[in-house]
Amino acid sequence: MKPNILVCGKTGAGKTSLIQAVTHAGTVPDEAIGDAEATTRGFDVYETDVANFIDSEGMEPGRTVEQYSSFIMGEVVKRLSSDSVENLVHNIWYCVDGSGARIQSADARLIEQFSDKVLLVVTKSETLRREQTEAMMSQLLDLLPAERIVMISSHNRTGLAQLLDRALEMTARAIDGADDELFSFRNRWNTYYVNMRARWERRAGDEADGYINWGAGRAAAIALIPLPLADVAPLMANEAYMIYRIGAAYGYAVDKSILTMLAGVAGGSVAGKLAASFLPFLKVPIAAGITYGVGKAAKAFFASGMKLDADELREKFIEGEKESKNTNWKENKIEEE
Ligand SMILES: Nc1nc2c(ncn2[C@@H]2O[C@H](COP(=O)(O)OP(=O)(O)OP(=O)(O)O)[C@@H](O)[C@H]2O)c(=O)[nH]1
Ligand SMILES: [Mg+2]
Image (cartoon, rainbow, N blue to C red; front, side):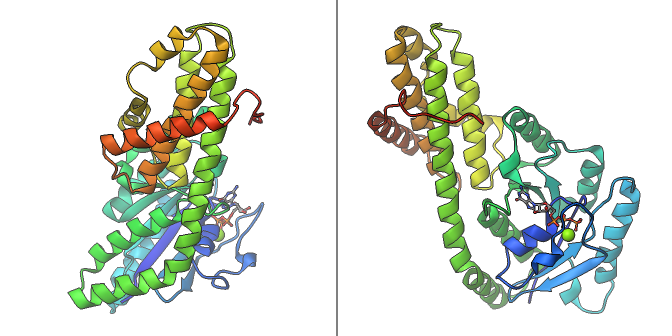
């Protein structure tokens, strides 16, 4: 029992790179990954011990959705009508380039067609720019529920653990085999990914820490602006961007309710705290400390698989806020993006 995972999307979205990132070295040769031109043609199947990854030719500009859709559906149907259940497509990863920033109606229509088998994979997530992050998230979340969207970067190796967890659940459901069969399938899967997972988890943690330091440093810089109240909105925007990025490092598309919940761990009166301390030299550590604490709470939340409750989050926030006092944020030079 081995699932077939079909990877599709626009040309250059990073489909082949993704398959290379989630398979052991040597499975996907570097030559399979293209630069300027459309590279993959037709379908290439990469077999591993745990799954067959079906790489597809990308949708090129000028090709209509109908054409691309019938090309992909043709393969799905061909496999459906073959004699063996082993050929079925169990899971589809529809890739959207994160640096392109926009989901087009073509993407939306294709995703609808694949219905409950599809995961929407936002690739190159490390290239998302500050101004586009929020718009992209809300656009994505209008299209599909958060559990069906995964943010990944093949280059930074982030979000991949999340993608594989969800793919495992979806394929296990689709396979619907006997208990012992499912049990050995999960075992094989976990064995195949054990070392990669450990590396990915470290990567996600490091990346999250990078964003926390960056966010706190920027908060300090914003707080230096000597207007007592005008700086609260940019501080909140800064914090929101930090949370989106931390979520993405763990593969999550963050929705508004999670954002509000995480920003809320600082306690109601961030604006109040800051307004009260109208002296810039007090505002700097307060702003940096709040942002740092919220960042640490967010990191712990996503690392736990979004399982921490309000008390645990509050604890992480307080720990973080304390820890931030060890840094002189004013001296700490943060590079701008
Ligand atoms: N910045 C960044 N670039 C990436 C990432 N993943 C892939 N790329 C780049 O995107 C380009 C296309 O990658 P491919 O994996 O060949 O994309 P594809 O979707 O298979 O493309 P076609 O087969 O031509 O349809 C290459 O230059 C990759 O290096 C990523 O995570 N971050
Ligand atoms: Mg390709």
